[in-house]
Image 1 (cartoon, rainbow, N blue to C red):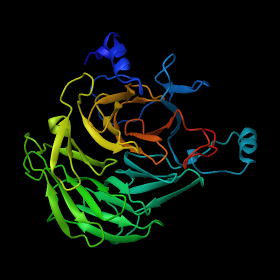
Image 2 (image 1 turned 180 degrees about the vertical axis):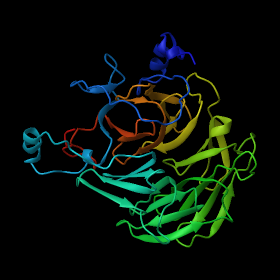
Image 3 (image 1 turned 90 degrees about the vertical axis):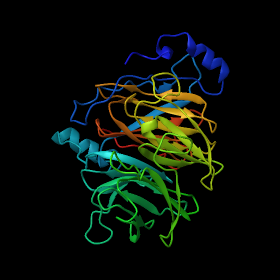
Length: 379
């Protein structure tokens, strides 16, 4: 694909005048390929990397990238000296094929479809753990989408087992929701903050009519209602991917095959939709996961464009960050898949190709502010 007009000038200035609160940054690009091993990233510049770039007012600051547990786990002060003397390398457990991410009070939960468990990266505590690498009802086979409620309970969509598995704040198994009766291809799960309702997306497929969002009671697992059906009309889906709950309880569903986001009220009544197929502002090529922030803005990852786009609650484009690239680097993506926004406004983006998580901090948040602030180990 060609670059969109924003990369050639002209329309960008008009958008900046219309949306003074947030300025466009980043760029759209061509379709991504399949995940693969890549060369190590180039050395990072010492100056802060901000979006948009000067002279525009920055809205996000690139903070750091996580490739393995070594980027999280704290170590003894003597470790740097020991490595300098012995030449030993700092080792950690690398991300195999990360897919989705959720954030809760400084903890990051990352589903890994190759490792077949969820990685827990506790940034403020400097600790690393696993969830679901066990036998029995709490064991995971192929975890994809996940979410966390306000109590810290983790909900994981297992596409192979066709169930949602719920774990307590300590990682202990609690219960299973769903099963073969309810899903063909379970792709994601979203839970409301109160932990009362679970929204599970069945992506369906060419031979399936289960292109639907199923709603369950989060405690009992009982089925409450379905939202949407297969089609391209108002409130219908073709290959739905993910759900986010907005500030006022509205539901935002990524309708991948129709290249749009469909919006419903908290009771599942269709309100409107935004987006279309294309390479211009606010359009989509391969939208995947979606998240929302405390101000009601909606963030959509597009794996073909190699970026994430930010919309307001009404679907107006505010910002996009990232470029598709064959070389790793801050905000450089080949196959981005997952996105999360924490309570402090930090944005976490997963790229399957580069096997990484990029972290962006709101420019108005101090580097040592919020739940996820900590002194990062050196690479």
